[in-house]
Image (cartoon, rainbow over all chains, first blue to last red; front, side, top):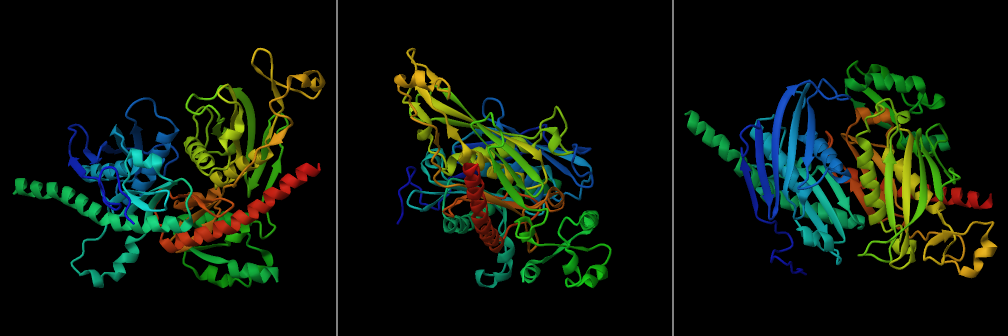
Amino acid sequence: MDEKREDGRSATQLRPLSCTRSVLNRAHGSASFSQGETKILAAVYGPRAGTKKNENPEKACIEVIWKPKSGQIGKAEKEYEMILKRTLQNICLLNVHPNTTTSIIIQVVNDDGSLLPCAINAACSALVDAGFPLKYLAVAVSCSLSKHEYCIMDPNKLEEEKMKALVYLVFRNSILSVLDEGSKQEGESIENGIITSVTHGVMTVNNYFQCLEQGLAAIKPLSNFLRKKLQWKAQSDVSIAG
Amino acid sequence: MAQMICLQRWKWMHLDAFSHYAFMSATCSNQYGLMDGLLEELEIQQLHSVSQSTIYLLRTWSLSLYTIPRQIKCFIIVGAVASANGSALAKIGCTTMLAAVKLEVMTPKLESPDEGCIAIDFHMPPICSPLVRPGRPAEAAPVITKQLTDIILSSGMIDLKELSLVSGKAAWLAYLDIYCLDADGSLFDAALLSAVAAFSHLQIPVVSLNDNGRIVLISEENSGAMWEKEPVNKEKRKLKLDTLPFSLTCALHKNYILADPSAEEESIMETYLTVVLDSSLQLVSLNKPGGPGLAQTSAIQDCVALTIKRVKELQKMLNEAISDMEVD
């Protein structure tokens, strides 16, 4: 059943992750996030006074600026900006800083597939680094469907091109519970909700739900990774203060 | 009997204080179809007993789907622009889109010598909405252009090989321009519908290769003189469209699904989900770009079920519009 992948990963295995916080000095918060060869640098500036035009002044406004690796920004980048902005609106507590604008700048360092999920993870880490009030973390995964209708997680660029369909999914981070697996039934229904879903290519509805299931299974290691990386600094801050 | 069916489809929607104004104006303009005879049956007392801060907005999804012949319905007119090779005017509720396809001869790319090309552009002129100001392009326009391009190309609706004229030398470049004339929510649905209708109406003109190796149009008048030069296209032909994609946008709020939201509803309910299915009910796209709410699996399933209904209705409507056109 297993299809061989060129880099020797199993179908559900993610590429090696790395996340570094506070990489930029002037930014209020920054993070660099990489999944395999895909690398994104994210910076947060703000909140500063005033909202953009046509935005609700009773809430905080989020502005996303996407900088591609090279060249001008085009329609694809505009779409990424819109998706990222609306995804971050979901996780941010927008009522805390009314009538302010927070800018998130995404710089693509290297694109080797799963660009948007990597950018969402990077933006989320940068927001945490900036101390922006969040409801929960957004955890993004990409899932692709091979010609034999087989789910493959976190494809790289080569695999993305060969695939029949591609699904980007964003969920909330999984809850760290002291209860054992069996008694966690209530929490699951909250966890299942999709923040963002973007698809490319034609597939059957069942295949989509299959991807959804796989994606949901993959967020646990990802959210554990994020939690570890983001907690680490908070603890070291305490030790310095103490 | 029809009224009873409608009644079952009414849904109660719970919204916060923000929607108070929207609800009142909706009631005044009768926009959500607070139908005269049904109002009493819907226990109007419940509406009054609700506290000031919580308002119940009611609407049925079927209203927008022209099940009820009210002002929210859709229609398609193909061949709305005489100067274009293919065109259509699509209206869903108040959202109006005008799409036109223009064909030009181009040299195909080296990597795909026997394929044509499609260039899609979605325009939002200031006429469509008070939110769009002249000079500054609307933020939504490039996003919708990108999504339309993705869907039209990935759905396999058009075989690009069909747009080829002479392999490696000449192919058709189809410019699809969609103008939003009235932006009243669910822009993407109406844009896709108009695009699909315009491509269904598209007629490829008769062309021939002249002595210099150039492609020339054969118009009706001089067709006799040009016949000896053997046209590349024997006659005007239509594009073969394999599967047609159709979409439905649903706004989500808590456990409620509101299909085909208007601009007013979109401003209140910021979470929406767009499902695109093709005629064989394959999923072409399931797009939920963030927003304050989450989409549960059951909600997605419901949205897909609604879209299946919608696809069948729109397909029927499009077939009727095209057969009407051919009769004329």
